[in-house]
Length: 116
Length: 116
Image (cartoon, rainbow over all chains, first blue to last red; front, side, top):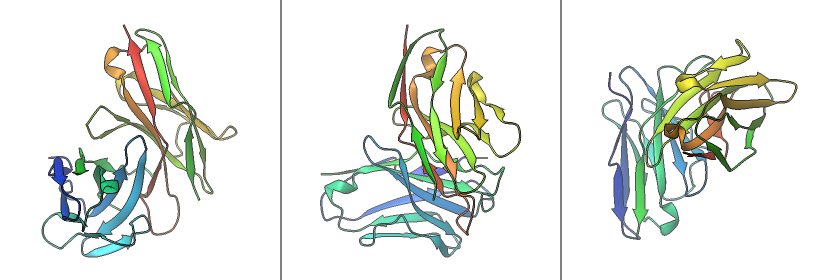
């Protein structure tokens, strides 16, 4: 059973371009979370999605950022018109159920975005 | 609201000596608590988790943590450090209420350095 797969692992974008980060959850997992890790900081929650639904996007910046988890295919985190402050590691995580007590959330290896 | 405070941003030990990484939490409900480890440019690996069962939790690679409700602490320990333990460690609390099960709140991280 493959783990949570993220791609690309490293992405370089010029200011103003778009960045798309993909996440394939573990097999059988229908709940996906995105976290951002800025340099020298811990991980910050961005968004929680189920198939075709956004459950909680309280951590998403109001502009330029969007996320989706379609019925088929990976979850996508999209950043439009990137700025240098978007440079960070973006981690995807998945779980098989709403992560109630005892369930664990599994993390991918992250996607490192560099904006030049 | 929930929060996590890791009391040391950096800890340095000699190989073979004990490790103590300190974590205090704040939670309105009985929390689920986790320790994750992150090696440089890698994803997050779960070390151990507390979910209201035994207060002394054993994890992988010889790590363990004790949940102390009276002190609101969840310190991570290991009797004897190994060079391969050098990494960044995150104490994490899980949202216990509402629809956002799985919304993890991360501490700022503690970088562990192990000297030969």
